[in-house]
Image (cartoon, rainbow, N blue to C red; front, side, top):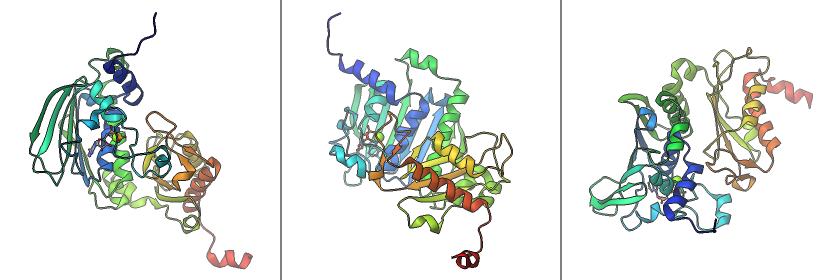
Length: 341
Ligand code: ADP
Ligand code: MG
């Protein structure tokens, strides 16, 4: 076969496969955009596990009418201007991939407005093709509605699990971000039922209350720990005391510089901190915020940014483990420590 350049639509669909795996990945990308837009409120609606319908609405900065089309171009972003910026980046997005990727595999409508313009912009696209582009009123912010996700990518559709399973994956993403951003008010509606409503008052314990109930919220232990505040790695958050545990590993949430990450190694580090305190088959709950200089972590190693690379992994794992262990076991009284010196 001769070598030829693929057409734009094919390129977009192939690239989308890397970022957009399932409805939960769409919700993750849209939520991250809302948070990057400094939304104080994000409302999410899904139907049929997100396969039928996804809506994410925010009160963030919105997109100006002159930039709306650009937002759907590959590698178009307002968040990064040079490669080095990645190491100092405060935003969750930076690749300019999500919107074109999502638009390539679904029918999409967007209504967005900025404070400084009289009216907003409405767009409708099907499989990346523009159907409608007009001005429309809206308060500052952005709403995106999706339907027929993956209808043009049957192989991907087949790989999805049941709507209930996909809905639980979406819920996991929303819950995680609701815990990472307690100052933002999140709501989630699944098939017409309101399943989550965080107060958005900035208090992590109140967000935990909404997600895990009052018993867990009242008993969770504060990770804020003076010993680590001085070091280059800051650990904060809440972890469950040994008497509050779960039968699965889904309730431990890790964030690096406010970015949701997955890490088996960190999971193990925390579980080890509970060794001797939990019976077999029981797992801790917790929200663990890791903050460190952007120069010490590479956020650009994974297609969906679910994993990051620390320049000194063992320092991070040790800090997390010690921060957790020290709130679980009784600390020696200060006097005792001084006497020993
Ligand atoms: P990235 O987030 O990596 O920049 P995206 O494709 O997700 O790439 O978004 C492209 C651009 O569209 C963003 O850089 C941002 O300027 C704009 N944008 C997307 N979603 C929103 C939103 N909810 N509110 C404001 N601006 C948005
Ligand atoms: Mg983005």
